[in-house]
Image 1 (cartoon, rainbow, N blue to C red):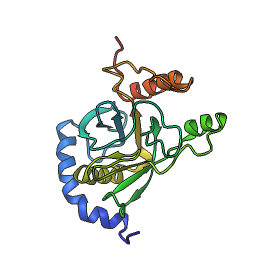
Image 2: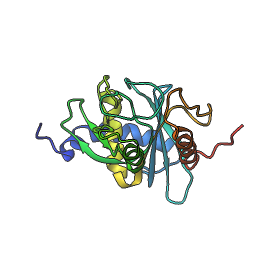
Image 3: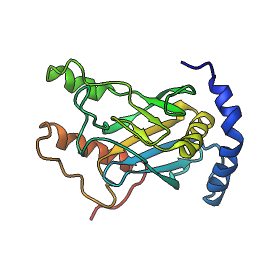
Length: 208
């Protein structure tokens, strides 16, 4: 455990990150920091998109980052040690400026939905400690590389965790249909329909 505070991390990386972020946001006509922020991750392409909105306005795509590493396959995370990146809608619960992976932001996995089905199916340990972090190795987290996590850490800090949501989808619903992987739990089809609804709340695409 290190002794750096979140303020220390922002002091170290914030100025450079903000200069890069402000250019990206200004080019899309969105003020920085935005009123609302959505990080959309697609497991099949290892891509994380940044969407943002001003108050009362629709979300716009600002930029994207390559995910340097994300273990597992398509399908929801079910248990501790399965090395699966979870799928669903999450919140960022905390910042870690002393992460072994440079900087990290913890997700609220398992959320209420994850815990509900874990309880029904008797899965006592559905897993925990899922982060968006730096470096390029993963056992269930989204590893973004150090430069990208400095920007994302600063962006979420400036926007506010309460104004930020993270949607992890098996694929981009506006491009590909959400297909339930073989061997998935029976509730996965309904779960993917919920992911699609959550995605359309950010990007209301027209399905083919």
